[in-house]
Length: 308
Image 1 (cartoon, rainbow, N blue to C red):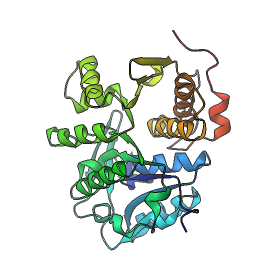
Image 2: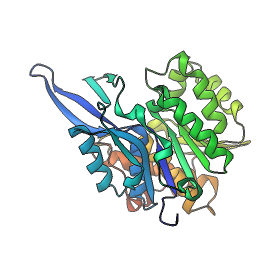
Image 3: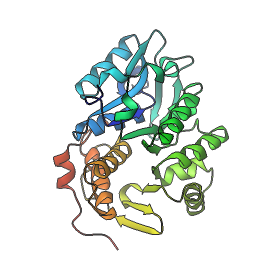
């Protein structure tokens, strides 16, 4: 029986952010996180049955991720645990952010798709990929193979590269392969600059779209709103005027909101899907930390009119 398996799965990394609070006294704050894990949580908060497919450690850091996943109502059958070290993001400076990752042979790298629940792919409607998981071998190769297999089976793929400094020239082939596989791609102006190592953002965006002209592309620009591109059509929406508390997780919430809208509101026009996505990203900024927005918060921020 697969009727009780989730329609949305996000595959990749769940990690712990260790954030410096007091450099003098060396006081650090630990927070659960990870781009793909955040997307799964954001989707579950909107009410769509969701899971995070990945591996975490069997220690206090893994315990925190497990408990947070359970609290988010994620399907825990997709979350694997192993006796390996945790994946840590060491944020040693916050203004501006500076960080590095600690994760040699860590738990996330030992994810095994063959251990996922029987029949899960037949039930899945969307599977999301992205984050640093696609820049960490051998996990990256496993996920690329999984995305390719799912695509051949008719499962829709979403992809958010979510650029980090580890995505250097060695990531170029992965970027192109995932872009070609994806039905929906989410990218920001900062992503384009980093991924293509160029200040010519327009050229980078054209190159990305050229790899997969059939993909729907969500192009986010922070406070300047976002645009949605499909074929020769493009739609624009301004960001709602809000009092920003924290932008962490806004991009993850925006792609989750877009997929939710496409899945649950298929009758809506592209502009309405975009407005829902932009409102989702803005709603995530209303609370501290990567707090997934609720459906009510998103709907309250929906833009009534398009921006020309």
